[in-house]
Length: 121
Length: 488
Image (cartoon, rainbow over all chains, first blue to last red; front, side, top):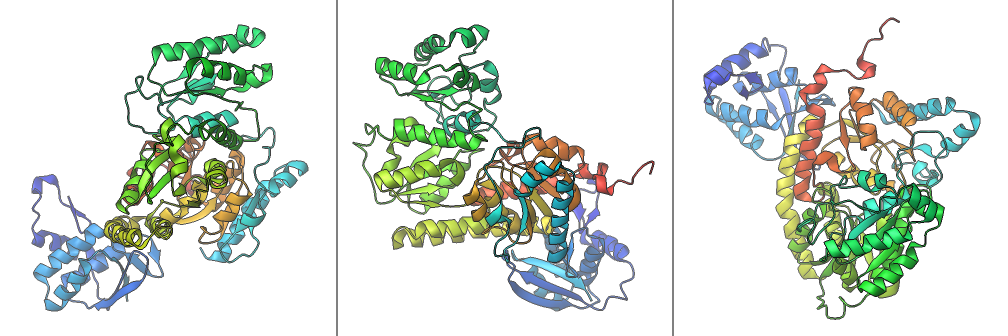
């Protein structure tokens, strides 16, 4: 199965531990010292922006979004890339478990049906 | 690509194509090609020449009048038998290809996917086929007694040898007391399948509309509507009907997908005719308006945005109860379509599409692609008329290359120039582009998928587009412009 874009073979079963995912994401994301923040926008299916927030460094949410931005082949529009829905829910689920209250609040937003885009600042 | 760059590229594409033609052909084709955008006041949608004879010698994608009548309008009427009068090929090659779904027991009370033909041979061409036709009609009634009527669909030779099929039909009708309708839709008539639609509509007008036997005991309600111009391809009319019924309307007829003779005959009892394929059925909608006072409106059930707009437009023709229910329907399904968009838009946004289809699709499907964030940069009709192109203007979202009756050479040249991410057209074009390494969807009969009408169907549409474009198979091949020139 794929979690946050990384392949976990069937031999590992369906219940891949968050630790293993975090390890792969951090390793894959590499050095993120050049990234100061990640800008996130949420829009309705009609394109009306309803959410705007920033994710600061130092959390799994930050690393996973930055990694997604750098690796995803989703087309870029005005510097933003839309987060694919499975990745969005997976990132949110793990972040809620391992990050602080601030990230938890942001992740609750990511759980809705709006379309989210991210840009590296 | 910025809007100006896109427009310039589109204009260059036309210039390059026209340059390759002899002067006379170039002058002719120039009138059928152009660029338009929502901001342009008199663009190609207003000025394009259409419904004219195809330039001889080019590979046109058009069909014939027989295809328009038998294949499109009459063929899906399920409880009638449509006999192809002429050599066997036309009947066989038009059999079941369009996937007009229907409910019934084939061969007993429904006959859509069967091929009935008089199977003309040399002898019939030389001595005439009227007698053979009469025998075939009798044979049909013996073998399939539950049919509710027969239509005779003329192939080219009938017009050429001058067989009087109208007389045969008239005589047989008086003997059998069942509707027997001769449709003189010889393939060579007109410039495309469009005349076949018109002829088919005229025969419905002349033969079915005057029959009030089904209408006289019909109990009307204030909420009766008829779906006109939905051929139930892959179940389209069924997925449309669900929405209309949830709104509180009663669908008394579906023309002509999954239709019966009686449904066709009671349609004038509707309070409103809902016209989906304007091109193929506007004639009969206008007739019902003039003769029976039934108003008609066009609607578009491709993609959630257009479906919602259309539902509100339809509801506005009825009272507040219907309007309130319509809002409930919209709210219910929008939650679902938002999920579909959330799932597929990230993978499809920004992808460009070129369309080349017939009927209503060159304009109606634009909204569905745009709902997924895809950008339609070219569209054209096989057999559209001026009013189709004028209506297209309302649907285009950006600079769009407009091509009427585009031939294979032109379409290939346009695709090579504009490099779309997806081509959505017919089966004749499908393998040309797939062999070029380009994702393709066959949009005449939904590439063996569907339905595509209504909210539920949008999920299928989105999935199909995603499968077509993001399939791993494309990583194993390359479009010509991505392939390095060899031996240069």
